[in-house]
Length: 284
Ligand SMILES: NC(=O)c1ccc[n+]([C@@H]2O[C@H](COP(=O)([O-])OP(=O)(O)OC[C@H]3O[C@@H](n4cnc5c(N)ncnc54)[C@H](OP(=O)(O)O)[C@@H]3O)[C@@H](O)[C@H]2O)c1
Image (cartoon, rainbow, N blue to C red; front, side):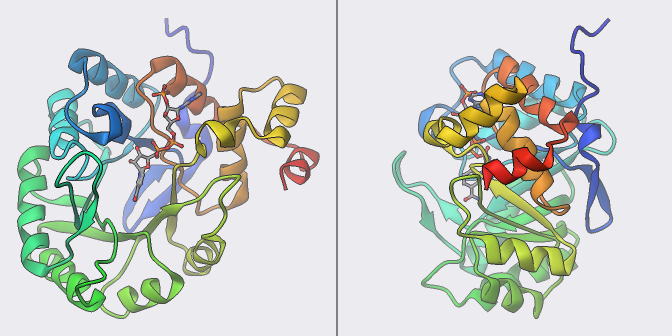
């Protein structure tokens, strides 16, 4: 019998990415690469076990990108999980390149995005990518050109749904004027709420908001108010931070990442937590 005493991420409820229902707590695979999202994991067998455990716990949205590794993260996912279980949505991203481990450089040129989608399809062993996200607008390429390229790829059947990442409300509106957008992925956590306006726009539109860096790093997890509420409720800081996100908005779809099965299980606990109004008030 499974020693894990929780029912898994199903308790977080469901949100739709276009026509695709997913549990409202996903898994961000970036941390399965080497340090700085560069190279392969030191222990590929262990990385495979983390991905399998995520699926066992009910995760049916995995977020990745061609720039994680680069390429290695997508290959790791197909190595571990192909043939994919029914209902698993793999969300990948393109539009950033990695000349070296320290650099992330935008490339939103249509010809690059076309090549990037072909590469992701191959590495993920898919005929169509369920959710393809523009990783970030390219300041050197008109945003509309990047979005039109993705709309063309969708029409060509290579992409099922389009998402965007690291955008403003104005860019969300500009993208929507070109093609339907099912999700936005921006940084958001207890400490960093600079995308509050984008979250509000997603709520108005009824589309998913995927907060990246949802745990807010060591400083986020150790913030005084998090410590106080977590100790009062007997929770880990990570589970509390994720439960706060889930309570914050019905369109919130956190994608926490980890290399550790214990941390993965801890994060999944957030799905079954219901914070009291005083907890939410104390967290601000
Ligand atoms: N769109 C973008 O530009 C963008 C940028 C960054 C990330 N992302 C996506 O967002 C996902 C999540 O972002 P992220 O990995 O930067 O941030 P995160 O999920 O908030 O944090 C991951 C870090 O927290 C630690 N951690 C995870 N669970 C923990 C727990 N229960 N207790 C203590 N520590 C824990 C991990 O270390 P351990 O491995 O030791 O657990 C890791 O160092 C990524 O995987 C990626 O898919 C997107």
